[in-house]
Image 1 (cartoon, rainbow, N blue to C red):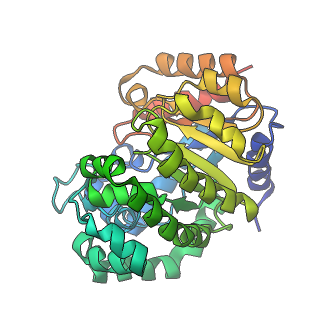
Image 2: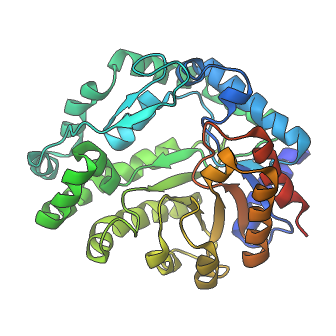
Length: 375
């Protein structure tokens, strides 16, 4: 049974999405940030789920003891990046202590495991045929099974640790739209060229993949941790693709995934890396006060607020470089200026995209102190 503080914070998530929050909501995001501050080697943090969960929880609790952390924009379940990310991007993941030095951050390595003929295979035989062929090229299947077994045995226990610490999560699920999956598997340069040369095939492949993407996303939502899911937007950013490609190949998949979440009474968080200024108004197509745009410091949030009003909540967007190299005063000035300009209602203050591994602890604290003390 969650105690009153946990329930109050969980309610504040709902209130913020509904623009009924009485103060700014602080939201932690930092998948790699805890290791250095807690004196843990990155190889142990990234490769050992027990160490990962404990280190992350202790780090967030240390911040929360200084200034309130209302919620999390992540699910901490111990899943290794080299097991989870290949299924989202069809790319290999280099890991510290294995391909990389012990204290390096894990890295996505696009190897181009898909070829043009795979679009036809997906259309004619289904995505699973291609996925099952390439997955063994991206990770060790025995290790993956061990990771799945760990989740089954410890998932609820780990979730309860965060409930006991009064840390509700906005999201527990993750969705990589078909556009992003194909881009990672084909490699960015080749895929973008395909989008111009054979858009019909890509569109048909996306249509075939989408029902499975929806099903997988809904299955990933664990309401004991957080009643929502990311809907990822990376290579499909407005700044990276033309309007013609975006309207045809990017937005329909993202919109369908988000709508499926909303239809099932879940929160849809559009995780938007890069600049999305050109297409911000399209988020008005989603039902009002049911979703969040989660930006990374490159999208103009002042423009976004003017366009979206109280239709869509905003999560962001303290830039990673500022958290890593800025002063505490610079961080506080950024946060105060953002809240002054767009207002506290419907606003989650959080790192832009993700707090980097080299975030200064004092800057993480300053970010939340500024939000909690704003008047």
